Length: 251
Image 1 (tube, helix red, strand yellow):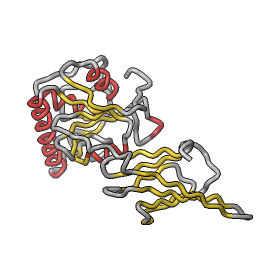
Image 2: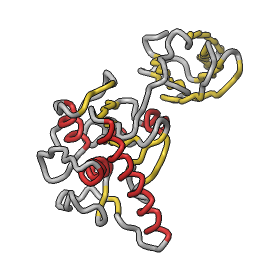
Image 3: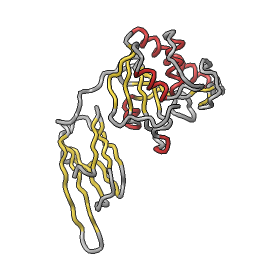
Image 4: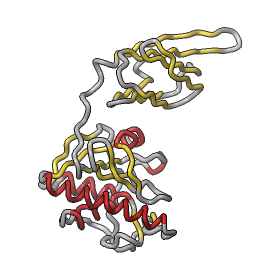
C-alpha cells in the first residue's frame, strides 16, 4: 500500500498523504485502535500524536454493487525521530507554501526564539506573529533548518525579533498597522516599519539585533536568497533539510 500512501511523522503529529488517485474513496484513521478521523476522496490529513505506537488506516472501496475494506497498519514507534532541538536564532527556510501554486517560487521563512516558538510574517494581517514551530513544520514540511555558529549572535537576533513583534502589536493596539505586509521589491530592506515579509523579518533580526548582514543578490531578500546564502555561509550550519526542499528559480 505504500506505493500510494506517504506517511511522515514528527514530534507530535502524523502527516498522511495520498500520492496518486486510488480505487479507495473513504479512509478512516485509528491510533492504537482508537478512531481519530476520516476523509472522503481527500488528499492529505494531519493527526495529533504524542505516544501512539500503531497507525491503522481502513480504506474503503465502494460502489453500487459492493463495498470492500482494506486495513493497513503502520508502526509509528520505529519511525519517529528524536525531538529536534531548537535554539534562539535558528532559521527555518521552506521552499513550499500553503498555497501550493507558489511552492518552489516563493517559499517561507521564520526565526526561532525558543525551543517551541518562532516569529514570522505569514502574510496579511497581522503582519508579524509569534507562533509554534510545530505549526510551521506542519504547513511547511519542505524546509531547511539553519543555526548560527555563534550562539550569542543567535540570541541577539532572537531578542530583536521578540521586541519587534511586541512593538508591532503595540502599534496595532494604537490603530497604526505598521509595518504592513508586502513583497514590494522596491522597498528599503533596512526599513523595519514601512513594509515587512517573512525573509525580510529574519534579515532585520540579524542586521539590527546581531549587527550581522546576510548577503542579498537582488532588491528583495527572498526565502530563496536566504536559503542560498545560509547554505554557503561559514557563520551558519545547516542542521537538517527535507529531501523535497527545492527552489525552482533564483529570486
